[in-house]
Length: 162
Image (cartoon, rainbow, N blue to C red; front, side, top):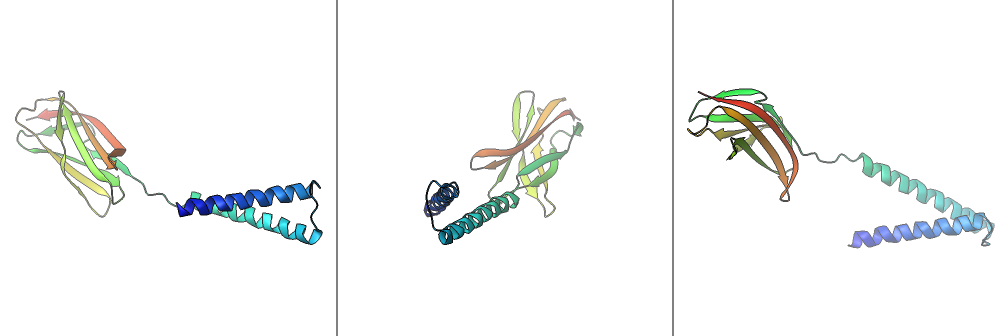
């Protein structure tokens, strides 16, 4: 709140300085030359500072939330009773969590045990129940921030059970 007041005060001062300077330049209002010069330089400085601040904020690196599945990408064979492993790349903020699932024949199985390393690689697994059969599967991974999906990726694979 105090920051908003400061920002809007600066905007109001900038607008007032600009209006007075422009009105004086087109001779709508009369200002002594010594004050007109100072007012003009003040306006130039305000414009330069505003421009620098705009570009400074535009160039600040924004934290990314990215996740991509790298394995499996096409077909995968898994033994009954074993785990399906999902691997990929992720870059996330500290307050972001993972969620993932494998959808097979209309049933949803959660990915568990998400782990990341210092190279931004992740791994997760899904236990393959004995009821799994050969089918198309949709693997989904999501980054969740403030109870909303901030980024997600999915891949469709042919799941073969042996």
